[in-house]
Length: 172
Image (cartoon, rainbow, N blue to C red; front, side, top):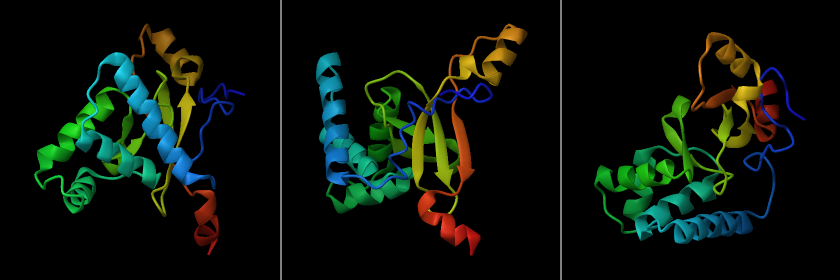
């Protein structure tokens, strides 16, 4: 089911950031998917890159580069900012993580094996992030772009609100 206004598919929405689930399996499956794609495409998933991805998969919320750097330091990977930034650049370049502009932070991709335009739902209370797939070319934005003769190459949709876990806190 796709909303014509926003081009977001509810059928393909991955709202795992807001759902209770087998978290260990979630992390293992995410790492396995990225490792398989790296092997298939000849990409080098270094220990630092893998650890950064693991941190993001474990959290289901966005982490900033300096929070990641602190976690890396605690794991013995070094304390210089380029360590975290280089790992994040690689992971983002290949679609394994996404940057959440509103938070200036990163979140693990829920669909690491697919080319897609993500739409993020960000809880304003706990910073949990859920990712859905958007189809901007099919929504109102796509219609406006076609009317203007504009070709959309990339979109990032970020919606701020309250997740189900925080709903009671928001109403208090």
